[in-house]
Image (cartoon, rainbow, N blue to C red):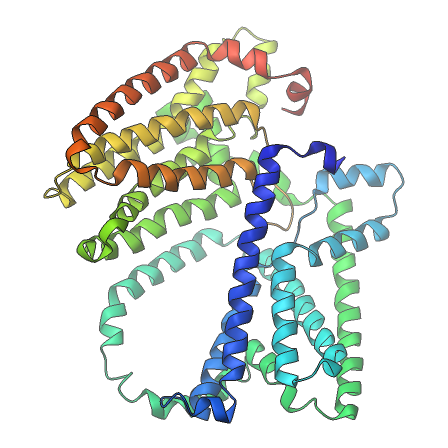
Length: 504
């Protein structure tokens, strides 16, 4: 079934995803090898700045950063609870299903990448493959602890996401404002004297404990005792996770009904954008995955654009990256609102089959409402570019490029919303449920970078021809979008199959 479902786009996504993970993995392993090799006395003599304390500090900082990254990126739930509950109704054993889902999570590519990184680090530290059993025990114990801890952390903070988000943004803004003064302070002039104390703190943190395991586990008796301890804790955590998985499969989480509890926010959206558009915007905005995405769309430009604008002359031919980050927010929100319009809660659409509410009116209002935020950001970004980049010669090309990219990708997203349908679910104990087809997300990222390079790089004496070409393409795109909106009901009824109606 998996092989038959493969398409050219899916295969390309698999290849790109695999190459990306391989690149990340190779960088982690090469960093581990470099840090461990630096502890060699003969090699360290080549680097005059290197001392044992500094080498220890580098290793402990890297290990703790790796552990922290693993905690944030560990995918704690890949299972589709709604589909797997059907297996229970057909008599499939819940314990067996929970064990399979646990194994699937352990073998997720991102989780496996971190686990293999720890295993190789430990083997390097021990200096021999004879210590593979104890290294495996430590690796699995670390993953089990992160798995269990992350589930409980997410369970605790799910009702305080707004406050944590506000706190994170506040700290981010303050840190970005103070970073230059911090690095120029006297703290770093006497940094050498703080390294021994910092090492004592870093060694008791989770990453430091793993990186220091080889110091106490070389004797055979210590290894046997550690293996028994790791095995017992892993077994307890595994049983705990199996129990939690069974509970999630058998008991519908209260989170699944959270979207029915509406308040003033949805009423305000409906009053401003229309009843149908307000309902759709509410479901998109309140989904946990989209909150994370919106944070990334806003934070990246805030952090990178001022820094890159201040160093425009140093970027050379890479100046288009500044304009790429300028358009990052409007294109991101366009993808969020328009890339999968019929994957969210759309029960009100079914009313058109029972009451004469006018399906075409509903669809147009929904589409125009979803376009408000991206279009507003486009106007703000283009205005900011006019003010900030006023002295740039090809300013007209930049503004025309913004409009062309916006319209071109709008057509792609409209195609995606009908042809790459992904059902959005409020999955219990997971806040990373993708809402856009992965093939669309990867393709859009690559096309956005390619379009930016082609459109924003100045062409010298051919710049006027490029501007005329962009005007022609903008006119063609505008006509296509108009035709799309004008015939949206016919397109909807032709693309939405009876099976898709049932799923909606």
